[in-house]
Image (cartoon, rainbow, N blue to C red; front, side, top):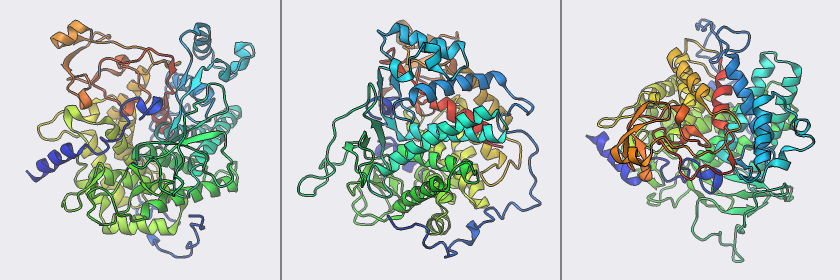
Amino acid sequence: MALLAICFLVAVLGTPGCGDDDDDNDDATDDDADDDINDDADDDLNDDADDDVNDDLDDDTEVYEGTHLLPGPDEEGYDALLEEKANRHDRQHLLFNCAGNGVSSDVNISLANEADRQLVEDFLRTTDSWDFETFSGGRTPLDVLTSHEKVAGLYGGVGIAADAFRYGVFRDQEYPQEEIDRAKAFLLRSIKGLFVAAEITGVPGVIARGFCRTDVPGACNPETTPLFNEFGDPLPAEKDNGTWREDNSDDNRFANYKWEDSCSRDMFIGWATAFGAIWEVIRDDPEFDEATKDKIQLLAGQLGRSLMVERTGGPGSLGQAFDLEIFDADGRTTFHGYLNENAFDRFYVAWLPLKDGFYAMMSLGIVAALTYVSEDPVLEDYFYNELIGERHFADIVYNQVVGFNLGYITNFSGTNMAYAGALLALRYITDLEAREKVAYATETHMYFNKPPFLSRQPVDYSYSLYDFVYATAVSGESSYNEMTGAPDAEAVARGVQTLMDFAQPPYWDAEFINCDEAEMESGDCTLNDGSHCTYLGEAGRKETPICEEPVPHAVRPPSNYHWRSCPYRPNSEGAGGPRMIPGVDFRIAYWYGRWVK
């Protein structure tokens, strides 16, 4: 009964992450410390996180003798057709969606420019070329794009992570040198974009929610607000979920960019994913210079240490100071910047005996990744001795991930954030016992989760990334060791099928109607693939029209990130415009699966 009461409380306060503005596609269009951090490197604050980062996996540990999660060309089970599809998504994303900002963003080609839209479609579907200029007779991607939308941390971050895993796969699986060199060049561009996000704010430990470059054709160029007024008071007076700012770097080196503040937890975990993947892939790679590696570690450490700072004034905090808050360049906590285990959504309820397992999962993943990258002993001590040792974060998620599944009113942005946290925690926590607890939570409380009196499980969503994260959890694989057991083959097969069902590039934001007016009125809908769904009307979160059954991915409406969109929604709303969707959801799932071994 106590658990049900807490679930009710969570629903009233808002699902963890519910307040985030990031419903479906809105963040892609219009929403959704100078000290050397390694000065204490000689302080052996965490002997468990030393050079032998996984002492629990000793020489007697059994190693699974199989393939990568998604096999490569020299492995049994390799799917050449799926890689061809991935190559088309990569070409669209890297050549067009990153053309203006250097990092993933939605782009537009006007519906009136039919010839240009057809040109891009012919290039992507009839060739495997990376040379659009030659194919088009001298035009560049920037010449055919009408406009560029902003980079947002979640999508930009996982896009960068996909670039890192892709380069690592090409390098380690001995692809042609031309392919390796091209993948490296794109990864270097992505790293530069990550540096923009972390340094344009001008405050160490503060990262932008998003940004856009203003000196390219069709640039995103929003109006900006100063950080402070003439009296030194932060602007706007009431903190919101993203205000555009001019470059705040100390030497104005990003004068041709603008940035959005108030980095929310979903945007932050996207950037953390980028840091983790980059470091995992390039740490020991001599092809990347030491200055780049040092900056990556420095910035990751600054972000991690910022989460250690305890602040007062949070809603419901009753004067108590709490850490695990994302703070901004104006000195305030961002609007959706709460990650502390005593908070639910944006409200502290420290008096509750039950802690927020959802935030604990996110914090485990974020801080694990930043600790792994920075190798900062102060951060290691905080993470392993305080968060895991004293505050029992791994035990919290082992026992519950409250609010993860709320049936019809589930916030799938929150679901995505939980899985993003699990992915990072499973990859970057060195403590084997803690990692096994995260794996248990991923399987029991998340993948097969069905709370009392509710329905709907992520196993049924047709979300490839969820399938692969769960399969990896079962296998025991991490950044420190290869698989120790077989992954769940059925989960992998489900994930692969969803990728095969993905739209072919170019991925247009086309109108998609499964249920017509008569079917919605009757509640009996035949979907475009001939399958059936029971239409429930506006029964979803924020009155989203949904079906009882998940819509098969092959006939699911377009989304700029499916892994955080409602899988029960049969029709697209407001689509059919000029937008070309980046497909970062496909790319992060595919290249993560190819990297896991």
